[in-house]
Image 1 (cartoon, rainbow, N blue to C red):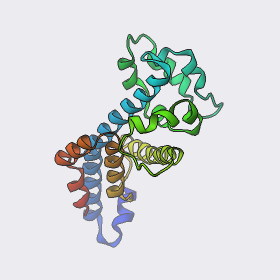
Image 2 (image 1 turned 120 degrees about the horizontal axis):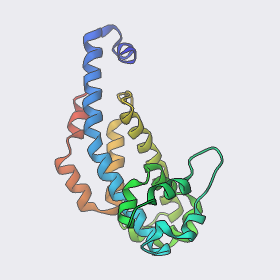
Image 3 (image 1 turned 30 degrees about the horizontal axis):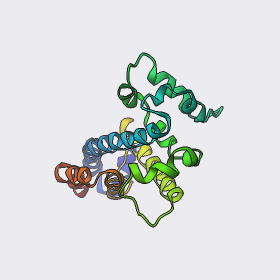
Length: 200
């Protein structure tokens, strides 16, 4: 509670507790749009990979070789092998891959093989006047923002200092880059916006 006590300052422990309760509510409310965003984006990225490596791309040696294998940071190839182990279809592998796997696909190493040809096909609503590399790079940055938010929520850490309105707008914009009807559908039922607005 120390973080909330400091934020409440002279307003006292009652306000700190109110802020703590709101942080829990808004974290729960953001899980729905984050979930929808992850599903929409991973399906779009999978569709782009499939165009280059076939519908069984998780088992493609060419695709596996295209993935980086850094010594000290996340290894998407290791994640891929773990996720596909014992799985019969690509559709079963996709949800087993970590969020960071999909983020790692939005790097320049995949521009020539995938994004230069497929980005506008799987993200049809992006700015037609913006360069593909700039769009892809911007998406990588957006996914990093959402990954950090997602991790804070998962670890029950405070999110009240973030601009959650901007975070939610980023989520909706990413979904809309794939499907405007899906973004509109989320906006119609999602409760996060109202909870964000009720911050004490």
